[in-house]
Image 1: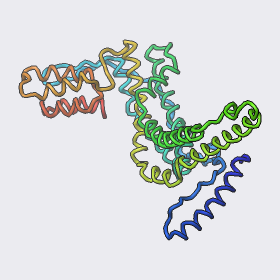
Image 2: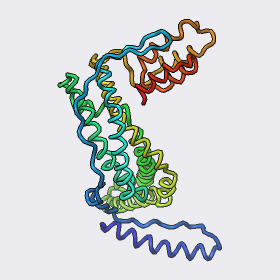
Image 3: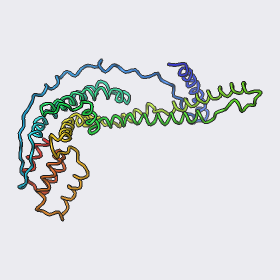
Image 4: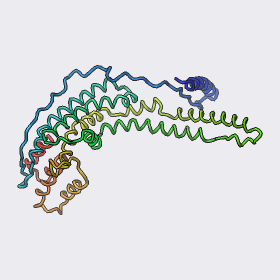
Length: 342
């Protein structure tokens, strides 16, 4: 702890004693407490926590696929050999994501007990599962003939598409960052509110005036630091934010991010034209088609054809199958849904 911090804490101690006496004299709390400056919190190294005892899933072996055709009220949905190869791994992705999520939950129980430990250890806990999932997904490019996919670009694509847990963590960090940034800005404003210049004291007393002005400006800077420190996120605010944090939802977000490395694999294959006309994320066009298919004015005889095309393009969107069941009520829908969504 620096000299300023130590001096400030002595000032805070004396100030709080005075404030308490004044509050007693007035019969109510008029003057608040001055928060002392605490030394930076120390955290145990992540590697020092007990390891997860269960073994990781084994490495996957190469699988083969074949072209498939699903029927939907007389219409056909064609599945390419390449897409079918990917679908053979879907269950394995789910099993691996479940394992790494369980390991994340275990590490969470050891590492996290408040706001600070959550924001501090998240990166280690999250990447410990995401990295092997990304490796497993990336490795599947090789048997599909893609040997020039950039690893960094693949990782960047995934974290841009699927980052639910990252967003939740960033929101927690953002609460503190926002409050602390506002505090710093206010402190700087107060510290810079009054500035004296030596030249304003007259030529004869210029040197003496400059010395006084600089001493005054230093004092204003210290006041600014005081204001900034007092406005930063308090332990009570951190406790309230952590208390409102829904960890079960957070765990499901972690699983989603891990499993969706499978969909990032599909996305790259679509971009590389290995798989044609498949979208992994529902866009405005799909939403419009779904809405129009529900319209009573939509021609009934065109519904099967339109649904077949919709499912072929957005095979991983549950709403497509919900709509197909609603409009067709066919067991064929369930077969297709089970193939893509499990």
